Image 1 (cartoon, rainbow, N blue to C red):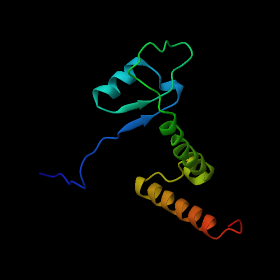
Image 2: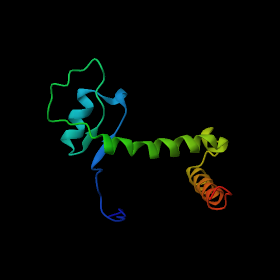
Image 3: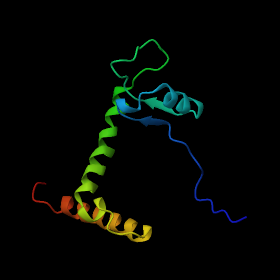
Image 4: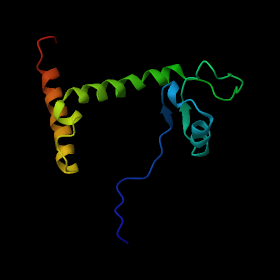
Length: 110
């Protein structure tokens, strides 16, 4: 076998998405894979399915990921995908996070 196993294979417990992902096919796929859908309903959809409750607390945690992605897009070298090799691209992401950490850790605002 040529497989390498690192840790154990796990599925996410929940998937948070905005209203653009509020489709029956997506919800059915998530349900079929035992993943909780944390997606608000669109205005044109009827809230007749009582089984799917919207977890606002879990949805608010989505903003952390959104802010991180927006911050990474501010790094011009990453947003334009200047590095073509995946190894170099990942290295630049690491450098961007190190730079961000140092900027936050040694800022005068603390």
